Amino acid sequence: MSKATKQHKDSDLSDLIPQAEAARVLGITRAGVAWLITNGRLQTAEMWGRNFVRRSEVISYKAERQARKRRK
Image 1 (spheres, rainbow, N blue to C red):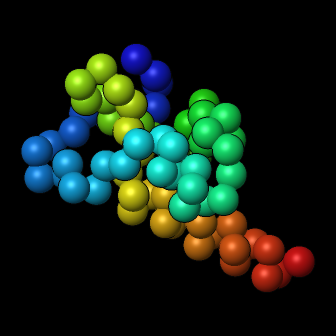
Image 2: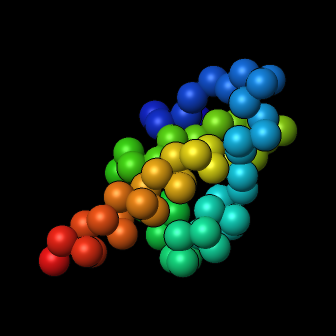
Image 3: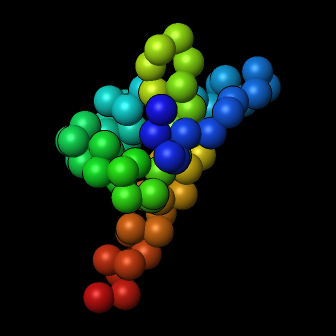
């Protein structure tokens, strides 16, 4: 289990998305999502033997990334 793994609550299940979907939302590869997880930018939740990320974190990261691009 990754250091970034959080325990999930049943009420949070609707916020979990597969890493492949997170990659589509962010416009990056699945390897890019794995890099974000490894470097602590996104956290995972393990269910059914698979790692998921929170949609809300992905959306927040995307907004931060876009804001950084606008400042340049």
